[in-house]
Amino acid sequence: MADTNEVIDGGLEILKYPNPVLKKKSEEVTVFDEDLAKFVQDLYAAMRAHDGVGLAAPQVGVLKKIAVVEYNGSSYVLINPRVIDQKGIQDGEEGCLSFPGIYAHVTRPEWVKIAAQDEKGEVHEYEASGYTARAFLHEMDHLTGKVFIDYLSSLKRNAIKKKVAKNTGGHF
Ligand code: NI
Image: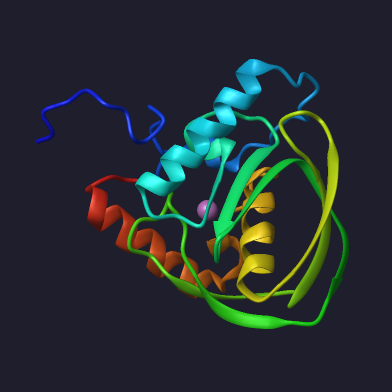
């Protein structure tokens, strides 16, 4: 146990599936203030503390359209993000901080162009391919109440649900 009270995870608890909050739709962000900037920093801290490449606000119980992605040395604040364009198909393994130890193959577009606001409200456009595109789309799904196992066949999805229940000792 650490002998200091230093908060390295932003003080945020990451909700695990099947927490019902993960299935809810988030609201648009309309106020760009210091509280928002602080929350974005806390999200980054929580994501890094859990070795994630992305984290969305609903995963910490906040139903607002806010997510962060950090991969290959690049960091992105995605507030009110939307897809402008997408191309191609990629098939790859995906995980989620709300599903510890669970990985599954998910098919997604190979390339995306998105628009998102930063914590100051400025709009940015980002083009990404491969794993970064996958991370953008995965986090944006969280903002509409969608999780990655929703893309799987019901057979695979049920197998994961059973595994989660076994891990947590919980019921559905
Ligand atoms: Ni996730």
